Image (tube, rainbow, N blue to C red):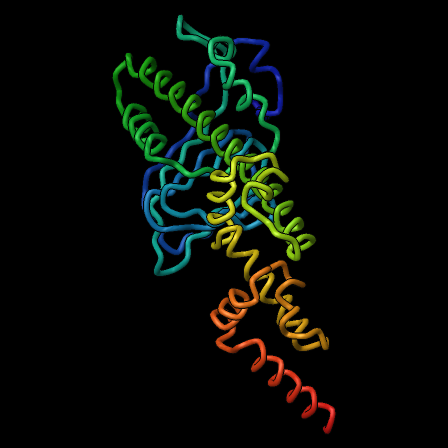
Length: 298
């Protein structure tokens, strides 16, 4: 089947088997491939080192354990820098009409609905991180292709089927991870906006979590992972920054600044402020006023 693209629906209509048309398993040093296209799909897998794959003039760095699936007729080139060898395992494949009793990709998709997502992939290419299962399947596939025995065709189809299932699994897991990360970013952004608007109020973790309809413990974990500080640590830092602004730019009495930033205890506010700034609120205000005076005299 020539000029094949995964974005076609033909694989889900007629019966086809994948067919390897070329492969290599070698170390490349100071390698420069001309920008080119071909009718076959390609998998480039980095075993050791790193390389750059330009896909339609967009550079993509691949490191150990990364692999890229390129659709057919996609302009690409492989670059390996001098002094930085890259060991790679690549296969090119297309599709041919079903022969024998081995299930076609259409039949496989009927049994495993997730395969449909790979067989209707329309983004041109995808870069994924392997947990070693793809590498072993590719290695066994290449070793089988090197054999001369007649029965190797069955083993090749088995490995190719396994490869399709594994790539689909990793692709869907990565998609789910990105969707989850995007949703996490939405939660965190909403929490940060809420804190900036309500820092001057008495806030508890339970109240903040209700803003995004999450369990307080779960919000604590995702916020700390994303921001590097807990929600309450972020709130405290925000309050101190607001207090610094009030002390430097207003005449609000120091004893009242704490309530303006949502801290009801003046003593606790003083302790926190000194912990974060290494100065007392009074010393900070005097220093800020002296700096303003120096600036005004210039």
